[in-house]
Length: 459
Image (cartoon, rainbow, N blue to C red; front, side, top):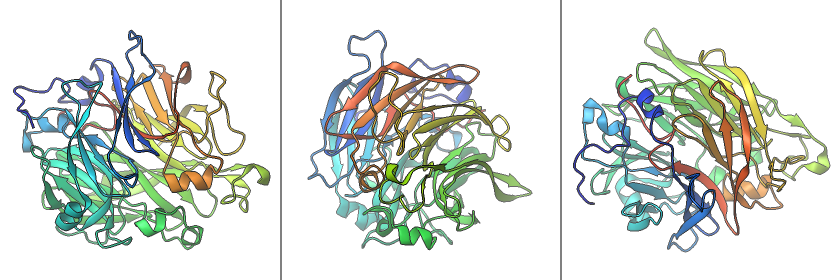
């Protein structure tokens, strides 16, 4: 790893300062079947704007299934608890969710042509951490944090969090000292100035790796809790159970303002009515609490419009699988992979969200074409937001086995751009549509940072 002198100009002490960062000119996107990292030109003045300009093929034998990924360092490097201004936002950490392999990708000297500089094999991960099936990557002040959904020895749990060293990418080990009642893993985030880490739970590999297990869902065997840890002692503080009807707690989005101690958690499905929901967690009298603040209902549909997995229920569940919070903590964007909607809420009052707007493309039943006229397969899935909150980008694939269940006619990878008005309101850009022939597309990261990458220590 090369030495960096000075503070990376993409690090910002506060979310308000990051809002004024220069617009993104590149995006990196996870592609699978086959696994690759795509580079997208986002510079409107470039002759290749809105196109895939490079594809970095991964050398695995097709067993990686690239899913989520993240930066090695970000604005958390400026936090006084672990000040590391010598770090730079340069390396992308790409784990394979199926293989448990990690690729370290260098975006310099040419960010348009990144290259692999190191591969960490699954055996090393499992030996040093006891974990497998790697998922979310976050750059923290103490190292590179990665969630893992399964235990090393097989398809069960518990899952948890592991750490890589900031400077040499060596595997340090499992993060937790005392996991308490936590068993399932998925996303994690923190209130970084309050030394509190929050984690959510999807499932262990036996419940997701070969597709959704309907019997297990009806038996309420998926995750339905969030967990709070002391970030310094790495010990479990408290569990909040949303109730076992609320199956699969996925994305966590804490307030960007480090003075605030609230955040949003998404739930994929309520088994009693097929609705998705958004919950707000908050602290009151020294205890953590949570309440449901948004419910998105299922949409009735004709049986002949539905895949086999949904024919008996006669409706399309929204299947909320991602969300992103603007840096000013004003707007929450929720992706509904089942119905093909991106929904914008005003969450200035986190306990009383207001629907602002929605756009739709794709979807399971009666799919809506892109404004360009092209038909989109899949639905709104991974969504990322520019730091100034004016542009959102989303992809359309969830996870290979689940894609095949809910969209059995197949998913052709796509990336869509949404233009956003300053006071709210959205419109899909009719001139921006990238289709990835022969590949599916998942998480998107923006050059220089985005709204789900950085943690800030100063208000």
